[in-house]
Length: 422
Image 1 (cartoon, helix red, strand yellow):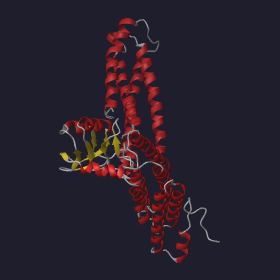
Image 2 (image 1 turned 90 degrees about the vertical axis):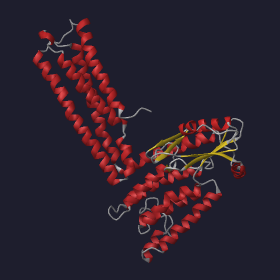
Image 3 (image 1 turned 30 degrees about the vertical axis):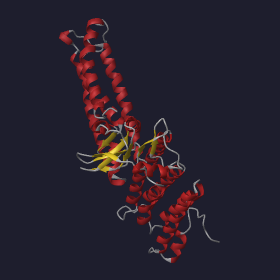
Image 4 (image 1 turned 45 degrees about the vertical axis):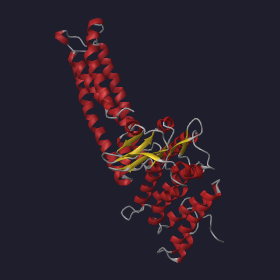
């Protein structure tokens, strides 16, 4: 994947090259094609285009700064990088700088050598670049609507749905059956550990695992790779990263490290917990006394419930990966249903215990999960969690009447009661 900072540099390089080559070709091959406009008018037009692009570039930088600051303050600091790495922003900056550079290069060929001529095709190309730049600027202004809370939550939710679909589909093609997983795990761990790989370097986060590469290496050595850290974990100096069990020989450490993609921050790739973490961050910030916006917390529960419904219908024991012969070659730590449930609701339950609106929406989400989950075990877990929520309400500072209202589930928080006792 190309580094996003290379995008404007590519635009600059391409425009500088075209600005050097194309006017020369135009003068050598198409000298007879010229504008009827005066030299002074052409110079004014090209000068205005170049200077205007610099001004609009400053405006775009200002917009980017506002987006980053607003997302950090209003939502979550972990959303800053997401908005700051928007490719549309970098393509726009590249187009603006390309227009500026090419306009300057064309300006140098107006009245070249006192010819009194204006290059036709280069001037027209500057006009085309201006139109493209204005379209990109309009698109950037439209992107400001993405800062609305509803848009932000839907963006995170869509990312979560994508990562759930991609992650479990990637594992499902090669995973062992759910029945013998416990026995298989016990057999794997009973095999001798012939190699332990520890991390060395500055703190980094596991962003993605190359499943195919790790399985291939384990298959060649006729062993099993057991990951000691999961996707999303932060590694520090000396952290045990993985162990190789029962192999005939040790695996090359460089090849193992190449299959483990590290970054400075968590990403959505294979990290199913990360979108839920971001949604919870938005919710608990909205519930803080400084902001006091429980309605936003209710809206985040809408997205969280949908993600949990999809997870509840997935095979969560997907961390046992087989080779083509059906032999387990890779064991990856995966969150359990209880882990997902705690991550999604624990902090919202704690910080929203005194908000009737939040508690009602939380109860509605839990009841919806109980009714929709195909697994009775997972539904029982949700039922026990619902009892914890009710216990928190009973122990809260709410008066008796508010506690009675809080015990009624409501998908809108405060809208339409569905558990009202007549």
